[in-house]
Image (cartoon, rainbow, N blue to C red):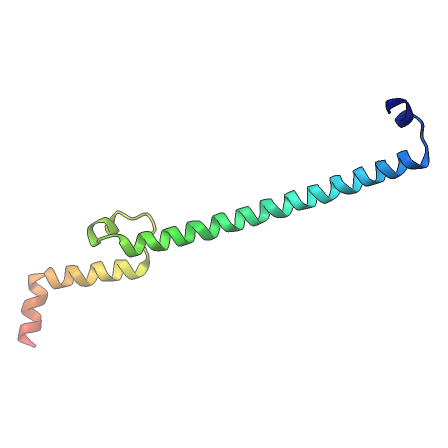
Length: 93
């Protein structure tokens, strides 16, 4: 068989073309698969992050890496509630 492959006939050139086509197709498929994997990884991390936000209690939430501005506003409101001077001002009004 190898002696026939060394002979550069039309069959050999067709086989070479097929191999080249397959290699380029496989490279494209691999590239697309990698892109899809990256996108799915990003989506998965976003979903997990959102789930983590929903499941965490307030104490854990303070130490969360992904603190949102809304949470800071909530904390400020909570501190205002705890501030006795603010309470006195509210009672006078």
